Image (cartoon, helix red, strand yellow):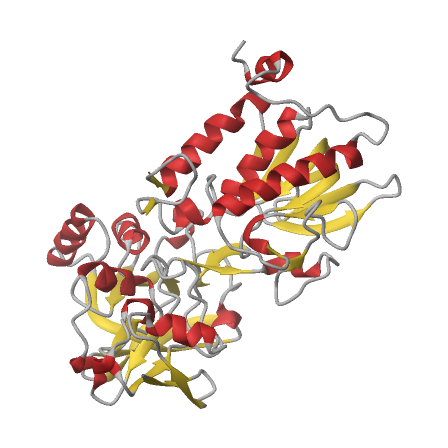
Length: 102
Length: 345
């Protein structure tokens, strides 16, 4: 399952996502510069991404905990998500995200 | 202030630094700990105090805060000395072979052994990605960009802009509103992570006209020679407007940066300290590294691995601190001398 990720320099990367894993794990394992300090516990807001090209609306809505945690993220936009809370699956194949500034 | 002399100085009072106090204490080695946070626990208390941890051997479920409390209790018989709210800044080798660690608060600690148990580094405030923000950070008391409020009085009579939706943001809105010339809060949504009673208080202040609240974000900072004069705000509909401000207080919590440890002269590999797995010593003799900050073949960033590393490190550190003494390995279950140290017999 494909993930298109745009890094902070604007470069596009095509990553392989694993079913049931998170987008954050793909970004991290793909060597992209994402802190993900808490390791996926929805506790730090350092895996913040923007979900592009209509994909935001296609994803299941963020949990209350994620919405709260986004208050600790910088430069939040209406399409902001924490990538550790986006689960990869057939329905996310081709999802496009941009790593938020830090 | 005279330098403190001790056996071991530990950088980082997270779970692994705390357990190192225990293991070193069993060997009669005294410890001082330096931590940039204002309390023990490191990531456990800063990032997930309420979240359960399920993989501590023998404790099926424990929160980050509970684990920290228990480790503090376990270390207590050895009377560790904590230097909270201080960042380990420089490390210098003395002629007598010991190390002198200096903090940004001016504390100097001389020790035979340095243990780096710093996790991923220092917790520092998140800095909004605004061009030139650093030029406003040292403008002076009460003006420019500040990530913490040290003396409230310095903010009296200022046009203050606060950004964020957590407890810090709301607490400072409530506390600074009475003495500010004007106080504006901006947040990206009309909802807050902060405690409900703080949000209610803020809404009251807004009704009374003492606080202005905008669903907006800061897009640019304006000013001359480090003196802030205003900011550009943008609303959800992308409309931008100018807002006058002397002071900008962004409260987005903390992030982790390696910090001055990178300048200590310790060999690093991708911001981690390579160690051997018998002693957990860095490539600089006398400087040890345990927990998330170290790396070796097969390393796992788990609290339980850090505990093991602390135990082996303590054995090696003993010989550095007491080169002419023989280490007697004993078990806490059977040794009356260890039980005496622990205060249980």
